[in-house]
Length: 419
Image 1 (cartoon, rainbow, N blue to C red):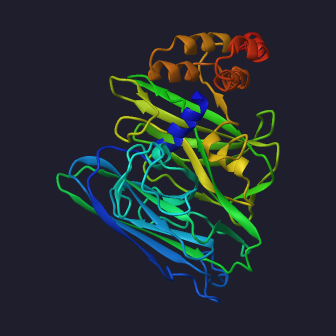
Image 2 (tube, helix red, strand yellow; image 1 turned 45 degrees about the horizontal axis):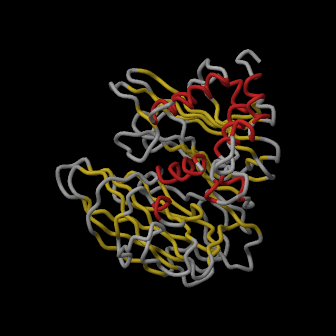
Image 3 (tube, rainbow, N blue to C red; image 1 turned 30 degrees about the vertical axis):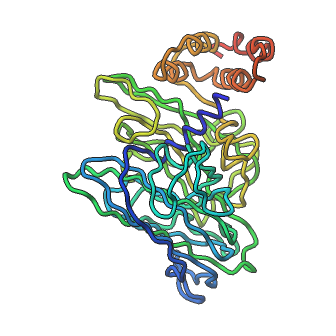
């Protein structure tokens, strides 16, 4: 389905790609600078007792004047309940992500049947979600020597990674220098004892694929994701590329009324991380998170969402929370990573009616026009427009979508920009 393809492209886009060269890496299980029992944690309070921990390291070299993507499979030998994460990488890197996969052993063929040498660092064009079966984001950073991505968790909360898990290290580097760039990235996963972990943390990952920034113009991408159960946020951060001017995330009630601003930034490069501990940021089922990204394009071609940090844009909201709810963290209807974004409402910033937008989408001959149709829709028809798209894009193969989606199309025709 196109909707699922868009979701896959979205998650692949967070791990941007270009041509790659060879490299090497190591994965080193060990103490990973774990906090000792009774010592002082980052919040100034006594840290919880240390449990099984691990450090993964990846080393490679990026060619001069290039944008490269590298991946590495690593495995866990112990059951891990992660209470803190620390990422360190070479300045110049764009971001690093640690993905959990569905594999029971390190694979040698991707989902397309291609044989890949996965014994060390390897090329991963399109990012892991494009060719490998990843199922959640478990760590990462978009800044060298970043602070703990999980924030300050209560002593009985931790992110769970089972023994024998196959994880995928994923590094994206922009080397703007005229020389080859040696790169090192490490991630320390610092655990607590399993007996102490009573609640599971997770990382939410929201992505808006509907981005189209016309030449010499400003633009805006906006979407909302439902809160499907009571959860507590610990961190939040946006991710954009060089056209980004910053982003905003708001907590709203079910009708779209703003309750509280959660996040704001004014830059795309190393945006601030908002962290909550005392008081906690607790959300209730039935609320929603609306977030938006702002852009300025001073070039002479339309910029759309996509894979490259040099030619495309993104609109991501990511952070840690507890207790884990897979529907919430994927902004999805099923909780499966493949359906990421399926529960989102995509909100336009233009003046086109719902029906006019559908007509525009059906006539779109390229990606820039397709994404632009959604951006140019008026905000008040977002719900009806998203519902009819969901129905059309997920209709049974070979069916008459006009018949299957008759109710949704009718609601779309009746939706106006003045309501």
